[in-house]
Length: 214
Image 1 (cartoon, rainbow, N blue to C red):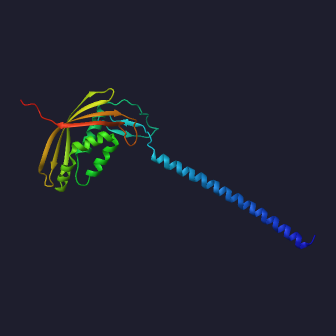
Image 2 (image 1 turned 180 degrees about the vertical axis):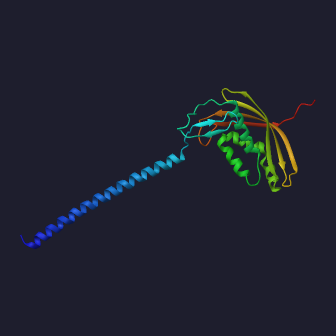
């Protein structure tokens, strides 16, 4: 066999060896990209899901604070009266406290605390058309919870909340005020970072409160 033939065979063998390694490298890169893509997709799905987290309750104020898993296990479903009271106070604050900078954000924030039906009931009680008129005057809305009474705890929590609302002008003058009683039916749900109290309003009714004549 001639030298030229030997050189051809040797070069062909080297080329085949290189091609084999290149194919293996491409295969490894392809499998790696698939694994990384799968991991990224799993992270995206996990980010969209609502993760249940432990909650610690301040028994003096009723505040619910999401904490790290390693700190405390507070995933129980029992709700203390002070926590229910704090939840109702926060709910009414978001509903009736407003100015032209916060009105949209406050209304959007109560979505996480209501069902679709109770959200519609709450918005109806607000009289959004009248609120728009107040906003054109740069008025500021304030609310104050005067009293709260838990009348039922099973199968859902029923609360009567007595509160006052005010509309204040930019100069600090009182434009209007009213006293109301709100009846909230509240259902315990899983605690989560989105809803640390683990409470959701399933029905909201509101009426003007008139004190009894002496």
